[in-house]
Image (cartoon, rainbow, N blue to C red; front, top):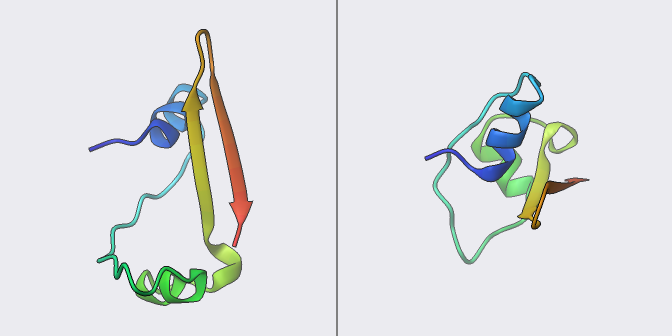
Length: 63
């Protein structure tokens, strides 16, 4: 399943890598997520994409 963030990156021809991991609802810390995908926390970003009437808005936060 492709997220709105991935669709927007595709539309803008921005290269990205999507990684999957098992979510532990009791541990949502950025450090745990980074460890699960074998990256340093400095390389992990959280995205939030919302759809407006005429455009996408993307918020990217470095964790």
